[in-house]
Image (tube, helix red, strand yellow):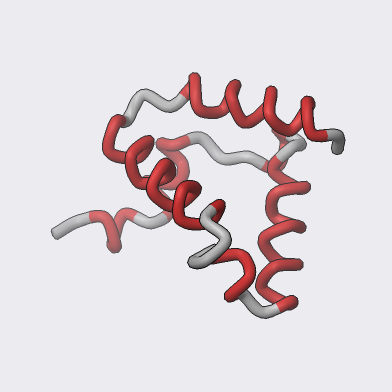
Length: 81
């Protein structure tokens, strides 16, 4: 995917997120990953990088996505205190 399209999709995704805490966590993760000295991506094994890249590609097809409510139901035992 070309850079301009990726940037556009990234901005669209960010604009849809309403949860400030989630936005701040992703901001910090992205900031850390884009810092060459402490880039997270480069510390990952090639297998993990491939897994993440594949998951990203699959997420571009809306048929592969779950709603927030479905995810909460699926992982409810880990979301309760």
